[in-house]
Structure formats: structure tokens, C-alpha cells
Image (tube, rainbow, N blue to C red; front, side, top):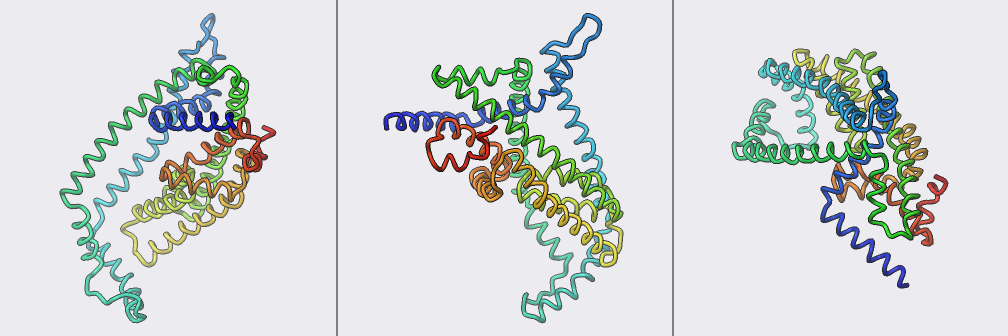
Length: 365
């Protein structure tokens, strides 16, 4: 009994420390994950030899970080011109003609809904409705609040990015530094167990992130191919954004579909609404519905069963818990964090029946 009380108190103290220094802990964990992803780059760069010169740890770490920056820059360079083009399209659109087109499409639907008693009759036109909502939702006070929030977010983001890059550099440069830091805080009698835990976590997370990369690749190819066949503009960029945002469980596909519809429509604002825009939106919606079936029934079961080795219902509940605790970010981090907790439980709390049931899939890792 004394052992369990001490263990519970230890876990409680660690939990309080993690909660109090949540930002710092998050920076270190993200940096550690980036160092895992950068491992292949490090090994590749350290094989480079030019005469007597051999790339050392410092140079390889810098080159790895530059590789990350290059990848991010390429992704950003793909999307920024698209966003700017859509902004120009929106600026050049004939608002009166667009409102008239929407009015012609909406009036028959509105009439049917009123006749069936589903909505109250209104003399307000589509253009008046849109103008009213814009005025009410974009008052000077709200614009000021939004601007202040953006400034605060930018400052916090800069601190976070700088901290993560700085920590990642040392994790890349000194292989095993993260493990050594944990072992310093670990009593001698538990060091072999902690080492075992970290090694198993690395294996499982490597599988998981490899599965996510595979998922992104398949979705990009699948969606871009279908959109291309259906002659939807910017098919590759819509597909790539959908694949990236799909990493957010359950919410991501909806965001991707909305983005795809927005890009498709804003690229053809001069087209006739009922004969061109509506069929186009229908095509995009069908493609995303097919993508969702592919992801739900093939990709996600494959990734979860072969990487984190957890039941789909178990994953669903964990994602809901993550959403409750941390919103969208919590949903993204739910599965990796749960994987880490399962490994820790399988080593230190294996005598409990519930832990045995939840960790039986990873015991062979």
C-alpha cells in the first residue's frame, strides 16, 4: 500500500510540475518529436565527406533545421499565391451581379420553405442580408479586438518558434540528450525501466508519424486526381491542404471541404451560379465524401492498428477527451500523448487489470 501511495504522490507532483510549466514542457516535447523526424536528415548529412572535411553534429543539425525551413517555405509558397489570387478575384467581382445570381437561386428555395411553414416570410434580399451581417459583425470595436489578438498571438508564436528551434538544435546535435535529461531526474532503481519506456515510445511514435505521412500522400494523390478529372481549378493545392488539415481528427475533413469549395467558387465568380457554380460545388462535395470514406474505412484503421495498436472506439474516445481538454490542438495531440501514457502504464502499472487490457496491443513492441 505504501508503494502505491508513494507512486500516486509522485505522479501527482510530476503532473503539477508539467501543468505549471506546460508551455516549456510542450516546447521540449515538440522539439524532441522534431528531432525524431530529423534523424534521417542528420544521418544523411553526417555521411557527407568533401576531401578531409566531414560534416559534424553542429553543421548537420543546422542543415536539418534548414531542411525543415525549406519544406515549410515550399508549402507556404504554394499557398500564398493562391490566397492572393483569390483575394484579387474577390476584389474584382461584380457584387451586384453576384447578389442577383444568388437572389435568383435563393428565391425559389425561399418560396418553398415559406409555403411549407419552415421559415417566416421576409422581404429582405440576399444582398441586404449579407450587408447587414457584415456591418454587425465588423464593427470598429471588434476590428480593434481582433487586431490586438493578432498582435498577441504573433508575439507568443515568435517565442514558441524560437524556443522550439533552439531546443531542437541541441536534441539533433546530441543524440540521446532528451533521454539523458529524463534519466537525470529518474531514481537509479528505475533507470532501466525509463530507458525501456523511451525506446518503445520512439518506436511507436515513429510508426505513427510514418503512417500520418503515408496518409497525407495517399489523400493528396486521391483528391487531386479526382478533382483534376472533374476539371476543378487548383486541384493539387486543394488536395494537399485537405491532406494536411485532415490530421485534425473529425474536424479536419470538414475544414478541408469548406476550403476546397471556397477555392473552387472564388476561382469562378464570374460564372453563372445555377448552371456552373452549383454543379462545381456538388463535384467537390462528392470528392470529399469519397475521400472521407477512404480515410475512415481504409487509411485510419491501417494507421492506428499498425502504429499505435489501439481499437478505433478507444481512439475515438481519446480524441473526444483531447477535444474537451485542449480543443483542436488537443485533438491533434491526443493520440501521441495517449500512446506515451500507454507505454508508461505498461511498464510501471502493469499489475492493474485495466492497464493490462489497454496496453496488451503494445506489449510486444
